[in-house]
Each structure stands twice: as structure tokens, then as C-alpha cells.
Length: 328
Image 1: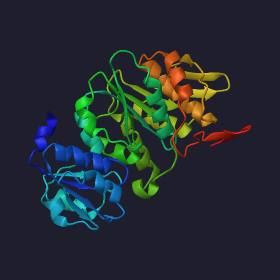
Image 2: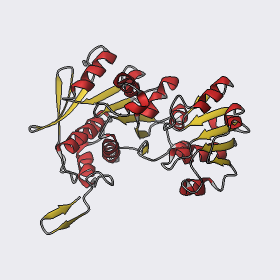
Image 3: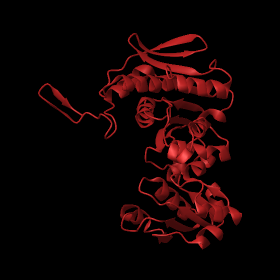
Image 4: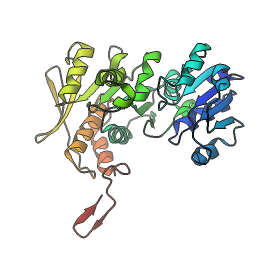
């Protein structure tokens, strides 16, 4: 198992955080026999839940500040995607020749399964969850996993993930920046939207777009890319990357129903009875059904699972009904 290569290695995890990735990679590395130091400028009090989740591992916690020796003397540095690329401690590591990676890159490096990646300026979390729900109808012994920026680290599940499984990952622009080092894109990639965001981190719209496009940049022949139809900024960016949109699936939710088109060929999709309201969620459902079709999932079963999908917290999830009033 690849984890054995970390036995006795000094690994610094930069950024424990509160959203799963830092905890997941810390636990995975410690269980692999690495000598893990966690470095985070946040206090132990503000990270109390994450600290409790790694307290049984015997890792070294340096919280409240960073120490240069943790970055200079490590065999590997694992960096949270939230850390800016120009952080001075990253320069310390690179000047010392310490290799730098991320939780997501480690997962993608060792994951044997087929990957479905979802990104977009808006809509990626719900679309990721809808795809996971729709693929829950997958036939045979294949399992369907969900993780990534949605707040779930799958590193500790690697031993249970099989080659014929599907892994559905929400991928942020920060995570996608690092894919350039790995040169791997998902076998099925979905981009929901593209408009200016996170420019404080990326600097320019061009740099932000470039990071987003890593989700498809390293795809192989036979892989699939799906994008939302009607987003001209997105269409132009993908056409510039691929040379044209001839081999790109465009998913669409319109008055006449849901559809996929590719190279002039249109595939009509069944219309689910959704609990989550809005035209944008119909478009998200079109992406989920499009992915299900490409994965050869029975669409009738996928429809049933999407009809049962209640939505994510804080994203128009139905909370109850009061008379004729629905509460979201």
C-alpha cells in the first residue's frame, strides 16, 4: 500500500482548519506511520473540534503561530488550499527543497476509482450532492462516494474504495490550482458556471479561469466534460481550452425540458419532480442526470433518487410546511 512510503517521514500539515480536509489528511498520515506536525495560526480554542478529532494520534500541534523549522526540516509539506501561494512559510519550504502537496492531490494520487469532479462559481455543492444521489442507483457492486470541498475528506476511506467505484468530488478553484502539479483531471468533469470570484486570491479573472479549467485540462481521450449551456463566459473559456465545443456536453434546463447536446446531437432527459425550487436547481438536476446517463445508470432510478433529494443546508432546503406555505 502506498501509505507505507510515509512510515517515519516528517510531515508538516499546514492548516488544520474546521472543514474536514486538514483533519482527514492528518489522521491518514499519522495512521500511515508519518511523524506529523500540524501548524496553524489559529488558536487551539478556535480549532477545538478539529483538535479533538486528532487528539488520539500523538501528532505535534503548533497552533497560534508558524515555526520555520516545521517547514524547513520536513520531508513533506501538506498545505490547506486556503493558504495563499505567496505565504512566506511556503517559500521557506521550497528554499529548503521540501516537496509541497495538498490533501486533494494525495487523494487523487492514490485513489483507484473513477472520478467525477464538479466545479463552478456557483452551484457546485448542490450539483455534487445531486450527482451523488442520482448515482446511488448504480448497478452491480460499484459504490458511490462523495467528498472534496463539500466538507468530506475521503483519504481514510482509500482502502475501501475499489477501482470500479465512482467518487464524486466538489472541487474549488483553490484545490484545482494544485492539479497542475498532479496533471490529473476527473474522467467526468462538470462546470456549472463561470463569473468573477475569489479575485483577491487569484488576482485576475484569467488566473481564476485558468485554475477552474484544470478540471478538464488533463483529461484523456474518452473522458467527458459537461458545462452549463447559456453561460457565454464559460463556453468561450472551454472553447479556448479545447479548440472548440464539438466534444463538450452542454446540459440545459429549459421550458421544453432537460437536455444534453454534444456536436449537434441532442439527448432529451427526463424531468424530475424536485423538492428544491428554482430554475437553477433544474439546471443542476440536468447536470446530475447527464452524468448518470454517461455512467450508464438507470434514469428511472436516478429520477426517484433526485425526487427524494431534500437539498443541502442553507441552500433552499425545505424545512417544513405551514398550511399552504412552504418554509425554506
